[in-house]
Length: 301
Image (cartoon, rainbow, N blue to C red; front, side, top):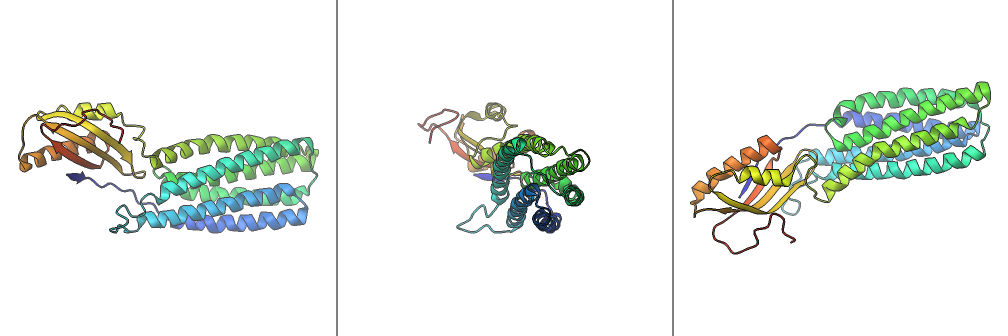
């Protein structure tokens, strides 16, 4: 018997779309600025920003799909997992980009390149302004949505990269310290990996149908077994569909043969316990009485 509470947090895609447009402007500016100034650093940052634009577009599409009422006979969950897939993709690409930037930074540390610092400084300031504004636009949504959080971190990393480029540009302009660009890039790469790793693991665990981190399965079962007529709870599955929806599925053995109406009353009790104490908003229960099957908590299907 299925029971559910539905809880959803609306996320606006307009801010994300605006951020995409702003970042596309930055990407083109940096690319052509790099060609004009002869700065490989600017061209590399433009490529980095272009990958971010692609990631933001993926997040935007996922956000649209997640809000659509697309459940059908073939797609009973619709596209509710679209944002989790987007978050996983974004975190993965950020980690790859971070390693690439770190590698390039180490190479350039030994072979610093002289560049036109004035153009670098100007474009870095533009990058700080645009990415900083985009970060502010997405900050609120990032607090409760994994997909938006991954986009937010992408933009935060871009802003920090622009800060690093600005500092490097100033040091190169006034002190000719060209190796500072490599050092700052390496620091940003480490920061990128640190910030992306949590999102990568969280989204991967959701895709792998792991139980939510804040839920101890044994505690859930112990609480439900306090219900007077429940003898045993086994064959348990707890997983997340996305950021908002957690699911519980189990076989419940009763101490006596119940009428369907009695079972329905117990279902309502279980529904309240799961929702109020463990924030699980969907449950599917299979009743049993004197049935010969494995009574283990977790059964290898």
